[in-house]
Length: 100
Image (cartoon, rainbow, N blue to C red; front, side):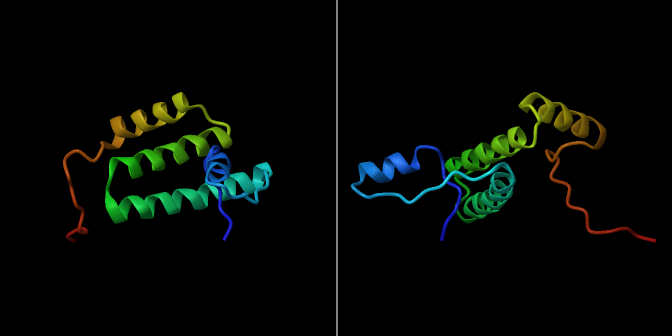
């Protein structure tokens, strides 16, 4: 049942009169759990499409970036480079294959 949670969740649980059972994960497990958390948050976004869920996805992506040793500036630079080379998704192009 365990999962990676936001930093204040144990405090919020205590404020609710309960005692959370927590542990601090090592770096390897942290990255693995962040990857799992990203999948969880993407599924939640897909289910409801809210800006709150988008913010959760972004929060996890930022944590993954930092945990893997990249700065947010580096991530943005790579994103911009790829967008310049291959484009973004603004034109809503849906590829269905190639004609021979």
